[in-house]
Length: 389
Image 1 (cartoon, rainbow, N blue to C red):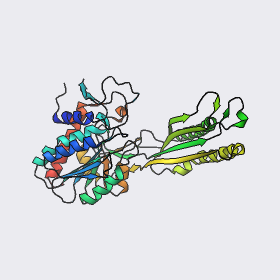
Image 2: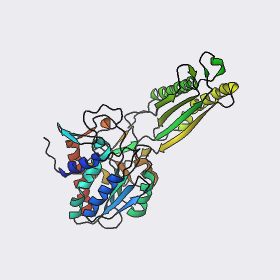
Image 3: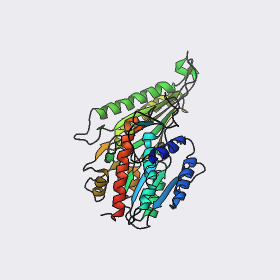
Image 4: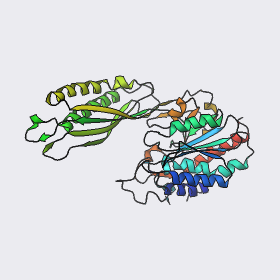
């Protein structure tokens, strides 16, 4: 068995995983547990963007002065429904040097290690504060990130660094794509399937739109960014949900897709999607010749800002020091980091676990990654004691 330097981190992770904080459900039980844990250590904390069944949490360890480090993570996880798990996803299982459970990788492990270090941070001679920021609803569009970023700006007095603890194998991430999600709804006209000329088949119309989105995605894939720092060096288009139809012998009136674009920093998304919008206009013209009530509507659902960090920026020397690294890299997935950066905060992304395990059945993080995260926190503690020198 891997000997953990801070076994209490696994105990806290076990507790956090046991809270089924799927984004569609409440996270308040987890927040309340963290509040009680912080209260036991006399750590002041504040709820952020509190709602009926959701809340974020911000806490300060140490003096209320400028220049602290913010350790930020999200409390919500993706659903497990329909996934072939070998164990109960909300019960932590340890085997073969790994711990399994929903959220172990994405991203309760970072929160667990940070909480395990609370007494160790507190026993040190403080000169700079450490802040803990736990947000909600990251998995459905980073909905809690902007209120949290604003709370950080209000409370923290110019932090030296915000660390977003998403799974990066404890490597520094200095850039990621944006995420813009949409739904497109086609309203056709129902008719008996034996008389297609009397109806407008919403699914067939949607199929043409899906082909257009697929063509856009292929075009981007065939024009990768040269010398890109991103593992997927092009802007991508993805369709994740398809709905429609009532019965085999009814021309469908309704069809819906949920889809997204993950643009590289600087990509003109409207220009990228121009062929799609042209196709919509052409199809609508033909549909309305049959029935003026027919139409196509596209709604933007969420927009997650891309992250683009200048690697020689003033806060990156600290980021390199904490990560024990001298370079960063780009990733295809999105984080709350872009939203924090958009508010003028100095950001990097670094956390335990591999994104390859995120959102998967039998999600896990290795004990080795937890120890690397603990080593990161040790360097945070050292920085805190030396006053940022």
